[in-house]
Image 1: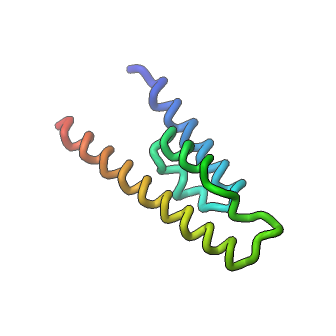
Image 2: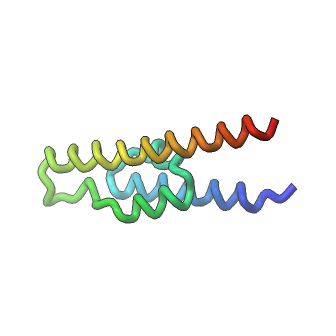
Length: 88
């Protein structure tokens, strides 16, 4: 069995989680964001933890960024489950 695709996906998921934490977003949400797709979206999001931002602005950025992550993660999990059920 070829484990390279699985290892690459796990690496991309871990990178997404790491970048999310650095940018002020929820790392666990972004871990499940479809690897490369989530990473690209996350790179495009603004930082939500800069010192010159007001607390309200930080909260707004975190909410919107994490919501985007939840939507991507939900779609990724749904696609995974559909593919898994079609293999039976």
